[in-house]
Image (cartoon, rainbow, N blue to C red; front, side, top):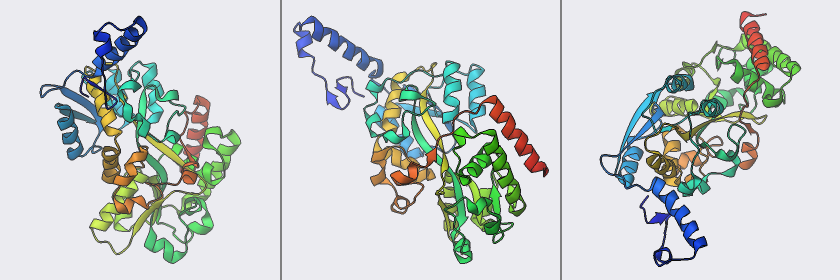
Length: 379
């Protein structure tokens, strides 16, 4: 951001220089202080360090930001939130921007790993759809802004399921034995108690954030009855198995399904893959952008976040990985085939059924894990 601009508008300070009144001077000093904190002119020797998920940003968008700020971007990568947290908690320094998932925001705040955002330096914050803001994990979005949304949903072989008359828009495709009998051995679910129990609770018409012990036990019964029809519990191979046609329905992540769909299309498979939300409800996973408390360049960090909240730049994330996008001004820049996708471009009625999971209590977690062990052991 140039030092004589604020929120895209030139700031004129002639009256201050000519000796304006005390109230005006005080207001202007505050404004200039905010500007100074983020408007240090960047140059080729200035570096923004990102600690990011692998493959999340295209080379093109990185180069475009480097050109816009006349700086260099250096990225380091992590495979999961636990790896990122462990490294930062151990004292790793040198990173400015990090991309934590929603459920680790509170632990990071408690460990004082994140610094509050200066919204005055983020004029593009107005581009974010309010429906995705002010969540329980960060009221007021003090520390983060959502950037990549992934739906725990169903990816499926549209060709096979249509021929069999199976409806993938209901969780019955994963849990109803009568439906599963038509596709036995062609279904996978995530090897994750939280994800599978959440989907089962939705299937039962329960809110997973308000589930009682009785609800969890009812969900266990649903899971146990469906398990004999499933081919596998899978966190990794389901993408490939779906793409090559070995699996016809899978409980997984929308960004993974997007990759499977692209792989099958590029390989010219004799079938069509698709993904869809379920009418009973879905879990919404949120990855965010945040600035580390140890950041050496919070000025560049704010510039980067504001850059990524521009509609055209935000759309590149969706076009790259098929993520649902919280930036409402991104839609015009989506690939034409993605605009019609109910996961990537959902209606407000669909989004209303999506739930960001709250942190479980230790008691809930112990109960769920015990029931999960019983399911997998066939008890």
